[in-house]
Length: 113
Length: 118
Image (tube, rainbow over all chains, first blue to last red; front, top):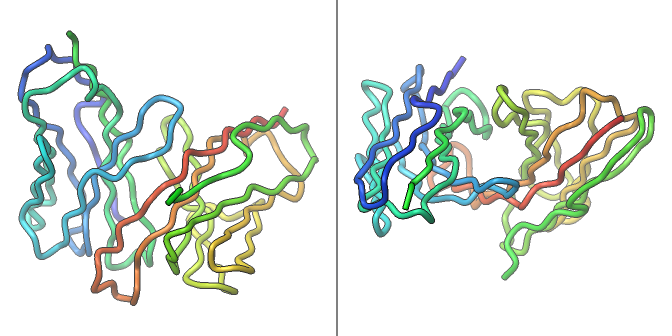
């Protein structure tokens, strides 16, 4: 059974800092990995999707990497801003889980002005 | 282009009551999903649909029923609500075109429905 872990559960940084969020998964047989952002009381916003054949994806200040063999993904946020404060979730679409995403529990990020 | 919308946004039920949550998407997606989000449990798939007229069970389907009569709508029903069904419910759709997915299969989420069962 696929398990997805995100460490740390919470992170607080000063504005302007570059930071890395981590996601690890136990089964490397995946189709893709998706990073989401969730603001309090809101839905999930898709940030980046990496196919299993890709190593990284970039969107603005965000860069996501994928290392299937080691079961790891990172989300790099450059020059963090208070508006980046949210919970970040990673989700795996596994080859043996039908079309179901398996989610981590998220990292709650606070960027302090 | 509204994306994925859900109604209602909030609802309080008494144990044993029934209700239907409505999800609508305007992206012409074939695949649609219902998840629930609970503290310490993350998001878990309840039911999903791979096209109009189809439904399938997810990870936690007990106590719920679904219908996909129109491609753009996916309904989640609770026939007899229980306090254990207190949760935030999210609908999602994806641009999946085939399986195994050769296209992106990116999932897009609605804003959620916060349900409390007393």
